[in-house]
Amino acid sequence: MRILFAEDDRDLNRAVSALMTRANYSVDSVYDGRDAFDYAMSGEYDALVLDVMMPKMDGFAVVRALRQKGLATPCLMLTAKDAVSDKIEGLDAGADDYLPKPFDTGELLARLRALTRRNSGFTPDVIRFADLSLDRAAFTLSCGENSAKLSNKAFQVMELLMREPRRVHPAEQMMEKIWGWDSEAEINVVWVNISFLRKKITELGAHVEIRASRGAGYSLEEKA
Image 1: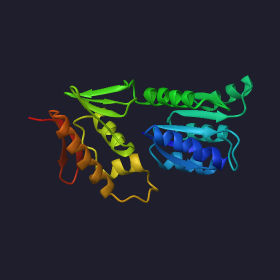
Image 2: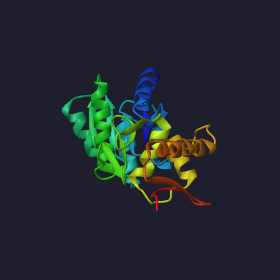
Image 3: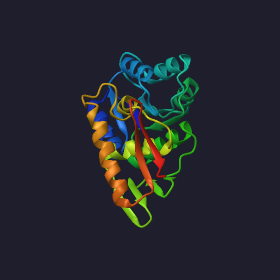
Image 4: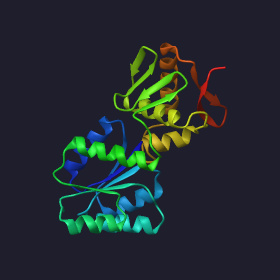
C-alpha cells in the first residue's frame, strides 16, 4: 500500500517514514502543504498522513482543497494541536481521523491500518486465495504448514495480486503503486519481484501461479 506523508520537521519525517516502510508501506514524503496537495492529486495513494502546521499550506487547507477537487483518499491528521476545536476543524475539513503529537507508533500504525481497510472495503489481516494465504501482520506467505517471510516490496506485490486475484495488473501500474512515480528504480524491479514470488509459491507447493499476459501484465490464478 502506498502512503503520502507530509511533515515539515525533517527528523520526524524521516523517522515516521522509516517506521511505515518497515511496516511494508510504500511512502512518499513531502515537507510542505503545497507539495502535499500536488502529490496527492497526481499520485494514487491508499492513505494520506498530513501534519497541520506546515509552510505554504497548512494541513487543514490541504485536505479541504483535496475534498473540493473530489479526492476521497482517507486522511489522518497528525499534529500537536489537540484542542477539541482543532479536531473538529480538521474533521470538518474532510479528514477521517486525528492523532495528536506526541503519539505512540503502534497507535499510528493501527490507525493507518484502519484507514486503509475502510478505503478498500474490509480487508482481513490474512488474505486467502485457493490454498495460499498472506498474513498482513506477520508478512508471511503460506500454504498448509509451509510458510515464507517476504521482504517489503515482494510483500506489497503479493498483497496487490491477492487483493484482486485473476485481475491483470500492468507492470507500469504496479511500479507506480508500489515504488512511486518519482522513484529512481527501473521497471525491471517488478520483474525481479515477480520471479522471486513465483519461486516462493513453487517452494510452498501452492496450486497457484502468477501468470503473465503478454503486453498486459500479471495476474494471480489457480493452476488448471
